[in-house]
Amino acid sequence: PFWQEVQALKQKDSLAFPAPGHTLFIGSSSFTMWKDAQDYFPRHKILNRAFGGSTLLDMIRFRYDVVFPYQPKQIVLYCGENDFAANDTVSVETVLTRFKMLFAIVRSRYKNIPFAYVSMKPSPSRQHLMPKFDAANNQIKIFLSKYRKTAFIDLYHKMLNPDGSPIAEIFGPDKLHMN
Image 1 (cartoon, rainbow, N blue to C red):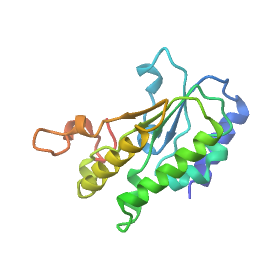
Image 2: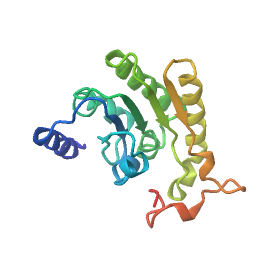
Image 3: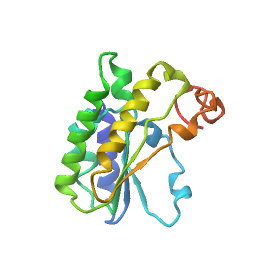
Image 4: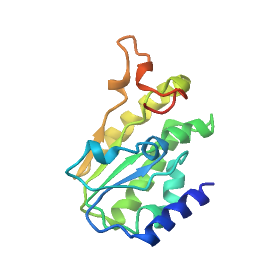
């Protein structure tokens, strides 16, 4: 899975390889579909190497293609939702273990650069998975709190109505991705 998407990213790099010092966005479709991210962070050079539908295992598998070729100033990861969505038997502990593996791999190459994790979001189309998302987000937040130069960016709770349901207006027609 995702071979074609990764090859397209590599092709893009072969035409104009990114200079060092970017903020590297990696992860799944919520980053892939964020076409105007650079507009939100005009003082930062954004390099988006996310690919849609990816899981933490996919990020581990393709690290030599979408993480390690670059010399980023910072890494921002959005991933984890698809791990749960792909298989009902995936537990919070499994996702946490996968995250820890990916984090260790990234830190083995980039020991001192800042690493930020953007929480899994409470999409209306995946409401049945929200308890798992919330629990995994919490475990990842606790894990990252033990490491220097890390950040946990909590979008999950900011995307909820007072009754705990997702704010529908911030999602597109698929009720999965943000508008």
